[in-house]
Length: 325
Image (tube, rainbow, N blue to C red; front, side):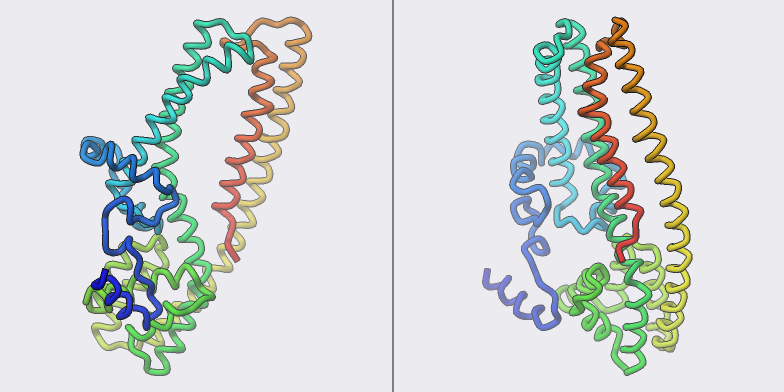
């Protein structure tokens, strides 16, 4: 604890906060969004999880870019643990719900429960695999929205003769550009805490950042610093370039929003309405079951499960594609 306090006291003047996730890989020290569940998952599956590593190929880099303070092994343990838990829960609850709530026969209810369990298995794996990608994409959007003004701010500091390390120190203390500030704090931490030079810190940050534009800017800073080039001119040109890209992005978002509105009307309004009318007519005429469910059961599933789930997915897509300014 004394060593950790000393490190905190050294790094605090630069505006970088040191938490336990930087100094420990144990699941209890990780500052993640999953609470204490990760500890139980790691204790149960931590030593066996290496057999599942090929399934999660490519997840490690996305996990680092997502900003989640959790190690790769812990996250894999949590993924497998929650997948097994969700599959078992659906396997038990779905047949019971079909038997008592919808009066489905026993054998179809069991078969439907097995199929739902397999779907829960697949969707849980996809959800855990896609969550870091989603988080990284959100951070990417935030960085690229802030980048034109951040590059201009850095150009002003460089024109005043501030060193590259000093530029990122100043950037790490800003409150206005939170996404880029977090990236700057990682660079300052690498230099001040781990003793890296600014070139190595920039290389590491360029790999871990989810934004390609920010990555290219950092990669361009490296030869400029090495050769002693005009840093202010480089950053000023980057600021102008990113402002132009932002204008193009606004036009693309307008086109995307138009396409999403058409998708919403066709899939989430007109489509469900036609299905509801069809199922109501089938129920009134005494139609037979579709698949293993009656028209009434399908109508209930569409109304209380399908439409809300479709709306949630649409909101997630809309949030992921919308700019954050």
